[in-house]
Amino acid sequence: MSRLTKDEAAARLAEINARMNDACDVAKRAQGSARLVAVSKTFDAEAVRPFLEAGQRIFGENRVQEAKAKWPQLRDQYSGVELHLIGPLQSNKVREALELFDVIETLDREKLAAEFAKERERGMKLPKLYCQVNTGEEEQKAGIRPRGCDAFVKTCCDNYGLEIEGLMCIPPVDQPSGPHFALLNKMADKLNLSVRSMGMSADYEEAIWCGATHVRVGSALFGSRDGLRSK
Ligand SMILES: *Cc1c(COP(=O)(O)O)cnc(C)c1O
Image 1 (spheres, rainbow, N blue to C red):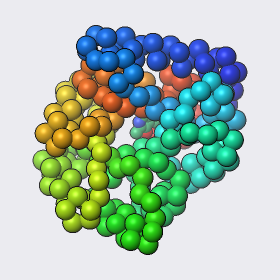
Image 2: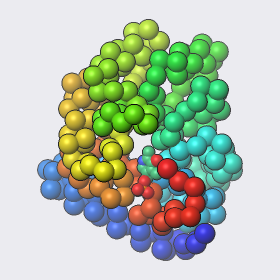
Image 3: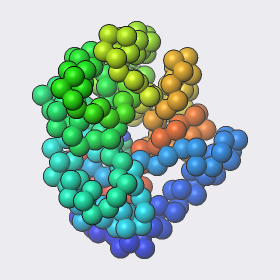
């Protein structure tokens, strides 16, 4: 696994941030109105460190166990880290996830909502919550179907007292992302949710044109995950 120097990490961050600002300009949005979530999955603590040194503070991980192996120690060394869970959450890992993450982007079923409510009852502080929407209605993909989204968000609020801040989607790999981003944006508007997490290395600018408030960028920052387990 290649390690970048702090300067190399800073240069990559600067380039992505500049392109994000340009995308905001094109969309007539305020610069800085979209946040960069640096997706560090599959990269170990030492590969992440240069990005922390360069000032990045928002990171995304897709596995609870992997996050647990690297982040508690990094958090001790760098203040202000905001860690997002962007991968599927099994209900038997809820407790651990609540201890590790500041934001869980992948709330997608009532069972999880119930688990969160139960943990809160036991005194656990809940992270910020986004619902994952399966905009492409793909069989194998996690997320609520678009048609069920309004009801699901309402159930989370009314039945479990959860505050949902936003929506997240991962468009199908074999389709243009634009229509999926537009759909997610429209759904969030309708539900009055401020956060839209969408766009990855290949399409984060387009996501910003479509209203993304958070883009999740991995390989464009850390390099290719080829040969590593990835998702
Ligand atoms: C891996 C991953 C990303 C980052 O993908 P890149 O193409 O490497 O930028 C974004 N979102 C989710 C949910 C992911 O699993």
